[in-house]
Length: 189
Image (cartoon, rainbow, N blue to C red):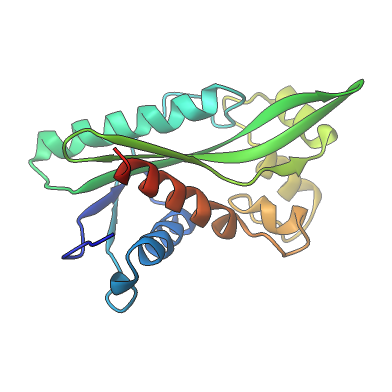
């Protein structure tokens, strides 16, 4: 997969974790970029979903961010090769009588012609008690990471995965393969 020059990449977020995952993923897909890593420009754009997305709302948030990012860049006349969004959210599943909550990150990437690729991160189990507390405070303003950080000193609200997996799977490590998957999905088109 040849990428002749470093591409102009924009992310619909200012998250340092998401930016680092994108840089790593582009270096995986195009190893020649690992010596001169891709620059990921950031612009915070709305997802138009709850602060703590659940179920289908998660993918919709990523799609909305890409749409809003493209519109913002095009209105400013900013060039780009790729626009990306990563939206993390929780999915509720039933395991017998028990609710099972899994946090995942959807990745949506589009090129300047509008072709799209998608990827999904590894899921991390979130305790039901944490999700219940977030629900009681309201998903519009409260994430499970906020609840976990309030209960456990030292938990990063933006990377609760690190705590939940005993430092084995920080959020960035779950996002890199998802971004690679989205890029390769786009390249197959």
